Length: 423
Image (cartoon, rainbow, N blue to C red; front, side, top):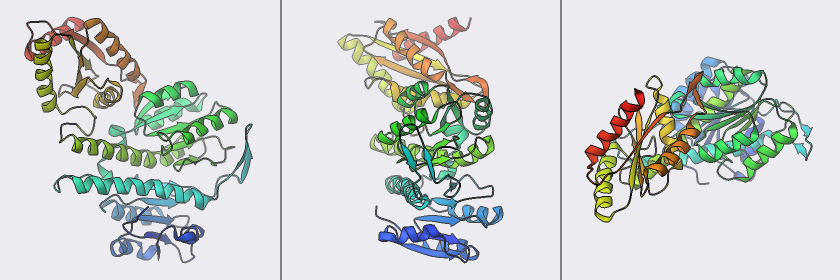
């Protein structure tokens, strides 16, 4: 991978062991500095990434470096090796020393990869996000800012929590206070969520045998769609010998799980947003980069055109409105992304200012539209937002095109269905 700058290694006076690994085979150009000069070095060296040996540093020193790194454009990864203090959300934690050296699973002997080898994989994954950000910056208008700091996990990210037992509710609440959560009590349910939703990270809690965990992580490793997902596992008898660059094994303490997972989840949410932004650029700005659906202006134009063409050529057309809890604006965003991912290529939709999402089903009668809408709605009901009793399942109303309809009259009739359902 070509680099836009060297890797800056920050440490105390003694050279950290992982710096030597970066030198082997000249994987990356490396510049080393001590903590006293770290902030100045970021400006002078202009690195592509910063690796910080944080075992002996205090929270204030790490926070100062993180603030300077966060101000850099494009995205500058900051990876803290073996952090022992609280770290800001733009600091990616990496633990190389807390995992047992060897463990045995029912299917294989898990030899722990050297911590430095795992660090190189973590670094490469972060640098891919940096390269994507640089591409977006090059193609966007200069006046359009975009940075990791604009990504709020509570608003933009979704984590898949898998587990059973007493720790599951605690993890659900702790994660739900910081990000959207999709819960799964089984590996089978988790697999379904991964196939139909945009997931920004996985937390695998207790309740599963080493064999089951091994099989699940192996599947993630073998599927390119999931290989770069952040995965935090609380099974302490597991060694991270999988080709998953963002895998961490931690204790089941909820605070530690959140502290480890959240920066990785935020980075992935940023990467996903950048990918949607590139699609929006390719679509000449007609796509909303946050939801993946059409912008409201593009939707209204396509809606009127679709009605005119359907009436001229015959066929069916139906419209569905998904209304979400107005107390939880995050629900509309999650629903819009699910619809964007699962709707047919012939259909189109947009998020509305009233908190709903309207979708047009082309060549579709009323009965079929109801079936499609129910399927979409059923996927949404599994997301929680902070309070575990708050769900994303929307109220759905459907209307179909009549020969005398215009875009305005069909929307009015859809609104009448909403009032009828409410009463």
